[in-house]
Structure formats: C-alpha cells, structure tokens
Length: 245
Image (tube, rainbow, N blue to C red):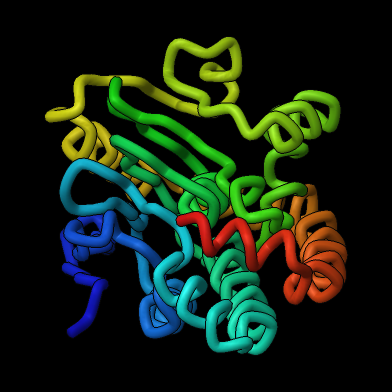
C-alpha cells in the first residue's frame, strides 16, 4: 500500500506522506514514489506534508534493525542513501516552488526533506531532529550541506554534533521557517503560500536562478556522506546502537 498520496489542486500539487502509524517513515517504495512525483513536470507550486502528528520520522529504523541482525546492513544502507540523495535532488531541481507544511517531528531524512523545500511553514509542535547520531551514522541526502546553507557552517556543525532537537522557539527558527502558526492551521497556511507562489510570475524563475547556490554543494556533500556511510555501516558501534533500539 502506497505511503504517498497526491492530489491535483488549482494552484498545483498536494503531496502527503500518509503512513501515520509509522510516523510517515521513508521506506524504499516511498522514496522511489516521491522521487518520481517531484520529477514530474507541472505548473504552479507543490505542498509537501505528513498525515497525523508528525511530518516524517526519517528512514525505516525497523528495516535497519532487521538488516543489522541479518548482517545485511551495508547492502541496505548504501543503496538506500543513494536513492534518498536522488529524492533530495528531485525536490531541489523541481521546476515548481515547493512548500513544506511541517508539524510534529521531522527526524533524519525527514529533516533533510524539509530543508530541501524552498519554503517551510511550521506548526508550534514542530521539532527538527538530526537523529543520525543515535545510530552512529552520518547525515544523508546532502543534509549537512542543506543545514550549512540555511544556518551557516558553524551552526550546522554544532547542531549535527550535538544532535539536539530544534523547535520553533529556537534562535534558529527565523532562518528555518518562513512562518509559524498553530498546528491546525499549518496546511491551510502552506496552501495559501503555495497559491501566492503559483500566481507569482517570478517565483519559479527565482528558484531556477538560485538553484546553483546550493545544488553543487549538496551534490559534493552527498558524496562525502556516502563515503563516510560506507566506512561505518558495518561497524560494531552501529550494530550495537540498532540492537539497543
């Protein structure tokens, strides 16, 4: 059963992660479907959101744990990280402006996915959590570059090293969120933003002209992240961390 629901709207496309029972975690099929969705041509804007209390819990930790016990973790993680990198690039290179409607937790890959969007509208319950440090794994999808692009390198390094959760009261919030509203207003506010972008003659042009500011850095960091992942995926520290889950 698909974890992605897409709905054509007058202003563009609504994309919903619809697996609230697993906090909208990203399995292989979901990443593949999202990538195809963002590569699809269209007009207007795109709103990306998650059904239920959380935006996205990141990668499928249950699958990672099972692969660790079976000795297949590197064979799961490396292709998965490559596929996720392709998804992030699809969001960044989409011709349409993309608005993230975020409430609850955006963890790991969920954080990277939100950062790849052009505009983020947050609910007051929003918490951005790196999460990779819990398993001894590096960021993926170019998340390290996206954080450095939004916050600056020093703040990005500090955040990733500590693994702290960041909420809408954080000093980082003005850099991370275009707007903060009550949770029950998040989707409506994101759609209103998408409507404005869809009707703007310059929004898509601005995205096209600014894409080179971030895309080369993201691609370079994706390669670095993959190299580090290959070196740590089979280590006892990662296996032990997953075993304690």
